[in-house]
Length: 126
Image 1 (tube, rainbow, N blue to C red):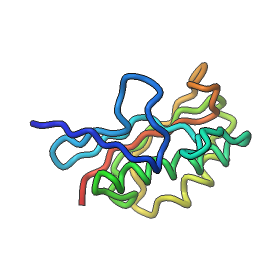
Image 2 (cartoon, one colour; image 1 turned 45 degrees about the vertical axis):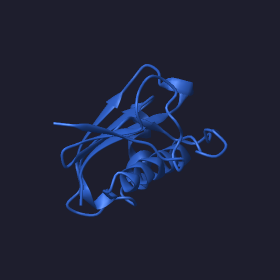
Image 3 (cartoon, rainbow, N blue to C red; image 1 turned 45 degrees about the horizontal axis):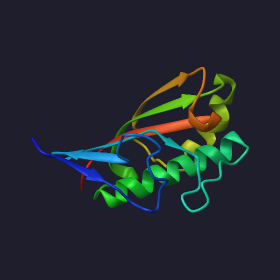
C-alpha cells in the first residue's frame, strides 16, 4: 500500500516531523489539530473557539485529501480539562450529523502550545 502526504495552507503547518494527514488506500488519517488560525498561528483563549478552529482545520485537511466531514468515521478529542467536555460537544455537534462518528475523548496533562483541545480524525475518501 502506498502512503500519500496531504498538505494544505488552509490549516496550520506541522510543528514537528509529521504530516497534516496521510492517505492510505481509501482512508485519510489526520494528525491532531490544535485550534490555531492557519494564517496568524494565533490560538484563541476559549475552549469553544479552539474546538471550532481545530475542527475547521480538520475539515480543510480532509477536503484537500478528497474527503469531507460527512466521511469521518472516528475522531479522538484530547482535552486539557475534562470539565470542558460539554462545551466542546456543543461545537463538535455543529460539524457533524447523525450518524455521528465514533469518538474517544481523553484528558491529557498538556498539549502543544498549551492548547486546551486537539482533535484528530479518520475518514473514508469519497
